[in-house]
Image (cartoon, rainbow, N blue to C red):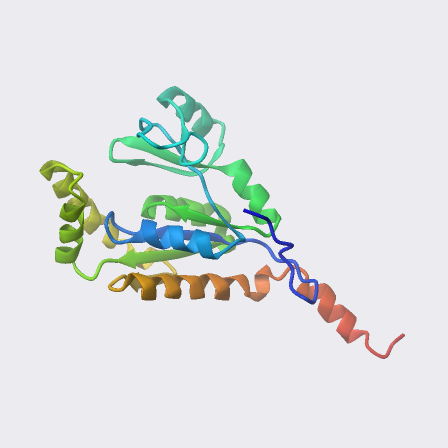
Amino acid sequence: MAHSTLTDPHGFRRRGVLFVLSSPSGAGKSTIARKLLEAEPDLAMSVSATTRPIRPGEVDGKDYHFVDLEQFRAMANNHEFLEWAHVFGNRYGTPRAPVDADLDAGRDVLFDIDWQGAQQLHQIAGGDVVRVFILPPSMEELERRLRGRATDSEAVIVGRMSRAASEIAHWDGYDYVLVNDDADACFEKVRTILHAERMKRSRQTGLIGFIRRMSRYGEE
């Protein structure tokens, strides 16, 4: 994916957005994230480190950075993560260095993390973070979607539903909350949020110089 100049016709540079998408498993977050990455050339996916085993078809360094528990603990002790959490018996964390580089270059970074990770990220990165939580239309519909996958055992589905109720309880820790009852409509709303957040004055790092040049009009 080619990098853009990340400027507008007036030469403004901007600071990137750390764009968080969270939802219970089955609410459609992964589909929306994929469509967002396809539609937005200045958006990169944050690649997490994880202790879970690699699955067929996955690529180390692309889908996840697959590490063992000892490596993960060392990275955490060395403060190499922006956030990390336990999820379904495994550990997941966001490496700090590549995210910082993208942010400083004005490139946006997409995060697929849970409420714990979103909370940690906001505590560390503050105003750079935009948090979006996606709700299913109902718990009944969420269960129907999980069962429709036909990939999980009954015990796993029960566990996911229990975790979903816990995750939804943290909805008020997000900047935006959307109900995904129509995948295309929800995607467009998420994309609109990203575009608006990019234009916030605090992210237009070239704006001050532009205004100063305007204020000197007639002085030369």
